Amino acid sequence: MRRRLLGVLLAVALLGGCATVPTKGTVRNGERQGLAPDLGGVGVEAKPPRANVDDMSIVSGFLEAMSDSQAYDVARQYMTPEAAGQWKPESQTVVYDQNPESLTRKEGGIQLTAKKIATIGARGEWTPAASNEKADFFFQLKKVDGQLRVAKAPPGAYLGSNQVDLKLAPRDLYFFNQPRNLLVPDQVWLPQNLPSGQAATQLIQELLKGPTTRLGNGVVSIAPPGTEVQVSVPVDLGVATVALNDTAGSLRDQDRRLLAAQIVWTLNQLNLRAKITVGGAPLLPDEPEVLPFTNFSAYDPQASVGAMTKLYGLLAEKPQRIVGLDGSSNISAEPLNSGPLALYKARAFAVTLAGDAGAIVTADGHKVVYGKLEPADNAGKVTPIQVEGKTLTPSFDGQDNLWFLDRADSDHPRLRVRRDDGRLVSVATDFGKDTPVALRMAPDGVRALLVMHSAATRQNYVQTATVQTTDGGKQLMLREFRQLRLQLTNITDAAWDKQNIIVIGSGNAAPQAWLVSTDGSSLQLLPGSAPGFVPEHVASNTHKDTLPVIQDDAGRIHWLSKDLGWVSMDSDNSEATIIPTYPG
Image 1 (cartoon, rainbow, N blue to C red):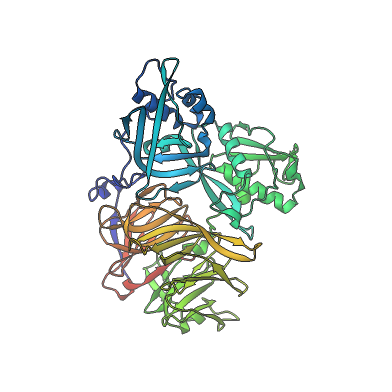
Image 2: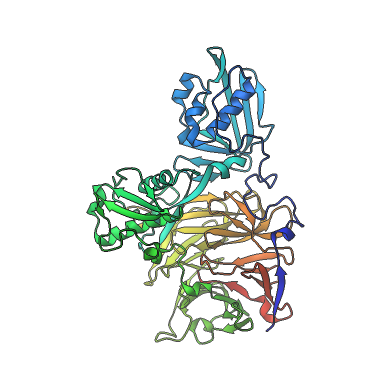
């Protein structure tokens, strides 16, 4: 079969169809699909109030000072002593759409009214605001020694959307999934442009506090309660010395290694190596003093199994393996005729991360069938599971657990997981009146990605959720639903992609593929996407070398090559109607 190169689609070409949508950077103001205008003073060091300035200048200076967590003492100089004493800026940060009309004069003070973008909680969690939510606060002013001062402090701090990237940075805290074989990132927003020692100290202190509510008890922090950094974390020649108190000394050897993995991975995003001590002695006495990052690569949250880059699919209701994506041969589909799954007609297909087994939803919609892909001693053995109503495409995690959701078209969708040992476990969940459209599990088995259909708006949306436990760990529950609040319509699909999410939907033009951060804080076009075809579904996973595959509205499939060009199967070939899937 011939390969057809659709062309290298650079960001400049993309702007021709939708000039107001950036292809790199962030989009946080959904209505204008761009950043708020520069009002001046962005990124400038906060200065104390000048004498005899008017009300607008006082409030503007206060907002600028409070936007920088390192300038809270400066911000308090804009306030009355009583207000300054009561203000707790660390409690939350409200991100709002800053523009020249945000501030207006009212009797006794200045009114702030703007579109609310998000709230960043005390732990640094980004929570997108609802589409109609406002940042609304009245800054009451009084005179102190003849000078105007803010007499009423807002709950937390306020940050203009055009200052987010200048003041804050997303950082990952790393915890373990329940089997303790993969790390799980817990993203928080922390001040950036700190000296390396302060940044490292802040990260480790946040790590030792444990996971945020987003992950809750779905993950494990190896550090015993009460574990602290004895002193700040000094950095010398790229090496951060983490001196833990004696509390961590009670850990067994294996747990010491896991705690080291959490610390090493958390510091690695600052390009720092780690030296870890407990009570003055090395945490891992049998390993190098400066711990190599590669010693902990086995816990990679992206689960970098080589088989994850292999593409599979369904052709004429039969499982296939797609070959030729690496350019070694013509792109073609090879039927998996030797495995037990080939005995069934299928409407959906999923593959384990190791690429050795899979699961199908039978064409009649009555069963989910699990079995090996290739001949083996148990080649003829399959595990059928009865399902009811509409069943979504199943999803595997990195522990070979099979997650599947049936009754999706009913008032009570049912989520279950087939453990790698064959046990079938129910997962409690409540989607309200909305309908699940797609389910994708992350390799860690903790984070879930869902496409949902809203009963209220009749539109699809994207949300994440976390698998946690209740009833003393006896009951699994899908909870902590976080809608990404994307300014997209006509959303048809979403999938994990490396450290982000790919979403198919419409911005201000035809449907395209978008790259979205896991908390919904940023939105940009997937590099290389273009209106040469209309995307409808996406196949991807978290492996760093996986090439995203898009199925268009005519059923043809297209690969995003490493040079940002699109490669597709010939449109006149029957294999163009393959339903693609990657392991996961």
